[in-house]
Every structure is written in C-alpha cells, then in structure tokens.
Picture (cartoon, rainbow, N blue to C red):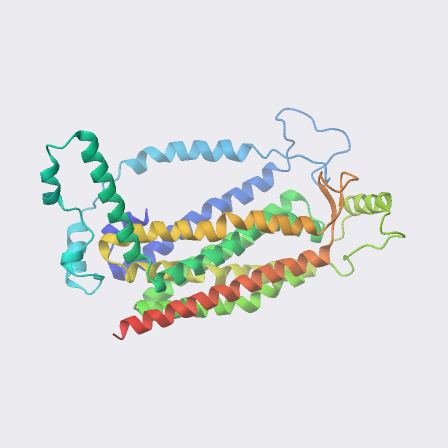
Length: 403
C-alpha cells in the first residue's frame, strides 16, 4: 500500500497520505478492542447459559473471544475484491512521475554505470547453455543484485532510523500484549471494561499522533534533515510521559503480608479474596489513562516522519526494498521478541501459581508494585535508546546533506 502511494502521490502530499493510511490502519485495533470488550461480556458458548455464580467480573469467566475473528475475517473477504480492482497506476501518475524526475527528490547513491540493474545483454550469451545451468547463473546474479541493493539501502543513517522504529515497536508490542491484563489487575476492573477503555486510549492516542505528525511535517514543509530532527524531538517528549506507569494501581496494593513466606494456602486465600472484592480508585484510573493517551500520542507522532526520512534518503527504485527492510528490522528487533521477553519478566514477579509446585498453572497473585516498576523501566529505557538512535540518524543525515 505504501508503494502504491509512493508511485502515484507527489512528495509534497506524501506525508498526508501516509498519515491517513496509518491512521486508518489503527482504526482496526480500535474496533477490535471495543467490540471484543462487548464480546467478552457474553459466555463463550453461544446459546449456552453460563454456570451458576459466574459473572463477567469473575476471574473464572470465559468470554466469547472467538466471535471477533469470524466477523473481521468475513469483512476482509468482502473488501478484498474491490481493493484488487484498483489499477497499478492512477490517471495522474504520469504527471506525478514527471514532476519527481524534475525535482531533487531522486537520490542517486552510485554512478549510472554501477546501478543495481539486470544486464540483459550479458545474459544473451547463455542462451545455448543447459537450462539448469542458466537458471543457476540467473539465481546467483539475482542474489548478488539483491545483496548489492541491500548494501546501498542499509546505510548507517537508515539503519539507526530503522533500529529506532524497532525499539519503539518493542515497547508498544510488549505493552499492547500484556497491559490490558495488568491494568485489569491493578485497578480491579472487568475484562470487558478494561478492553474498551484501554483500546480507546491507545488507539485514539495512536491515531491522533499519526495524523498530527504527518500534518505538521506537511504544514511546515520540512525537508529530510528537519524531518529527522522532528522525530528526535517527538521521541524526547515521550520520555517523561513513560513514567505514567507509576500511576497504576491503588494505594496500598503492593505485596500482601502473611504469617510465613511458605504459607501457600494463605496466599491463595488472599489472592481469591482480591479477585472477589477488587479495589477500585477512579481518580488514579483517570490520571493513568490520560497520561497513557499522551504517551501514545507522542510515541506515534514520529511514525509518518520516520517513514519519510527513509523514503527521502533512498533512491526512487530502491524505496520498496527500503520500506520492506524497515518492516523486517522493526519486527525482528521489536514486535517478535517483545511479548516473549516481557512475558518472561512478568512470570518472575508472580507470587502464587495455581499449582503448588510454582512451576505451572495460571498466576493467581502478582507483586503489583514491582509490575509497575517493570513497566516503567521497559518504557523509559527503550524510549531513551530510541532517542539515541534518532539523534545519530539526524546527525548523519545533516552531515550527508552538507556534503
């Protein structure tokens, strides 16, 4: 989708189109969180009465989690056909491409004689070679071309920008996976209400941040260096807001004292009592979600500008590969390992498991105070690392532009 916009949209309008694209993509999670909050209030089996004594606020309640998958899968099947009917080039594409060729948008990383393109003339001599041998030669040539193109794309400036996206993605992926359950336990909320409130705050913050970042860069008419600086400023603004996780929970909800550290039955009874009578403190809940909204806003504020930094500094024909490498690096360094690492750290803070051996089962009681500290450390540390990467990318971009 990004490549379709790149081919058919002028550079001056690219920020707005990317902002609209990313904002629309964030509406899917918004609808998912809100609808899932309603689905979780219904018993898992359709047409079946829930067991007596169970309610949506009970820790043993099992909501209708599967219904969202069916609805959104059907929606995707309906939308696939009209999307596939769009042409590769739109009516104004020729004028847009001509304007790009006349402007300074095209970045040339090497001389024309060294461009990474297939040499068809050199391959004509292999017409009479065996088919398998020709296929191996073409495959080897393709591999060398791909490696050479990746070497051109992965300059230090772009690598630091991609790593910044990865560190941001690490914190967002870890929090979006486990934070609803953490907030539910910290404030004693039901699963459905937590899903709706958390989804509303994270998606509204992300959507407004994406749109505001793309609009601001377009409104100010920033070039590549100014856009890279804007990304750094947005990342620095998010650092103090990362301490919002200290506002989670209610006063006095830390470790519960027992007569003995090995008093498993006592801890279990305390955990069950906390589940049956959760503590709720509305003022701290509102404060946390307001701060969390602004954290999401500043986090996604540099989403579109960061993509623009990569696109502006890359040669036109290499931009699809640059976007693909950015996505791969962002997921390998953030989206994939984040839930595993953060989940492992959360397991270390569990005080009581459903199994007496403490080697399996669900966690009945966690150390709420240490969970808050863990969320704060993860958020702040990765925001600081992301700011360092963006600072290095900005300096390298500025040095390159001054040559």
